[in-house]
Length: 198
Length: 198
DNA sequence: GTCTATAAGTAGATAGAC
DNA sequence: GTCTATCTACTTATAGAC
Image 1 (cartoon, each protein chain N blue to C red):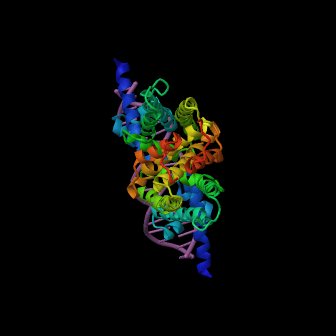
Image 2: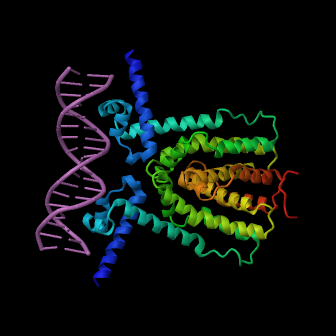
Image 3: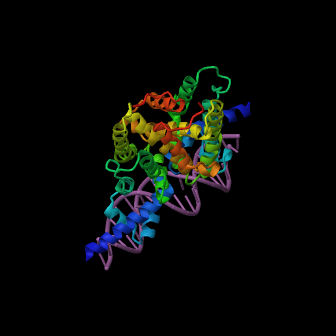
């Protein structure tokens, strides 16, 4: 009974902390605001997480995990019987599209803190970028590509670059470009179906 | 005489501010440290730039301008008589390579502050991403591509994604990948010279 | 113009009451 | 276990001496 009340408070702290850190970054986040938004005292926060940095670490880990589940939870690349152009199209949308706006702010924070918290960035690479490269490499290998890892990384980098420029850096508010048009071009090139001038 | 002494102090402030903002981001930067590193008092800084935010704006503009000159200063795409694969290779290195480590930290700060300072991000897009897309689009149009803008953006996004994952997010410390191998793959695909399985 | 000194506010973290 | 009250340090910004 007391445990569940404590668990509820801890969840409230984490939720409030997420909003605060996503809105202001690490240095700009205020424990005062987190406490007041969570409906607890600052002392309570410190009893859960001794320092601000511990709270930040816990939160980043939680956000990173949830993104991992989002990207790979509904993805079964190997056993999918659909044609490559369909599979790759779906995967491109998985990488570059954003169902919830929260991940954009997470990326901003992760990149923004990647100088002061490099291990968060590396952990993100390990748990998201590496498995994506691996899965794609195996897939392109199965299609008989001569350099499957280069194809895999080209695919991933193109969609990441698109996401960073259009969504994270507000590029689509300056000059919007359709993500499907990009991925279609890329997929046709990779599969050798592109219409060309000759 | 007094003017030049003032100009020297102002330059010292901007240099110190650059180090401070790049190292700590906007919220984490301290005017105390900037003043002490520049060898002036805080009051002097405030006499030049009324608020911290004004100093930050000035600095970002300066950094963005210098990067613009770096990327396009030595680049004459249209009149270059060299073959496409050479030109594109050089351009790929321009986008993804970093002669000075400073730009990595600038990107981290720009992305990290792009939620609270969206106009900086947009200004960056306008002065760097847009001209790149434009130049590349014209180049691919000259080569007879059916959708030159899609090819242009694919090229730019792939190199940006590579840069963000490998350099900004420390990806190369987790699993390094050769930038030339990526751009060679991309260029061969675009120019229709890729070796394929069939 | 540029400084020192200080104002006024907020930061993270803790002691001690309950 | 959670609170209120407080400590110490640091923040931006300014007033006033020179």
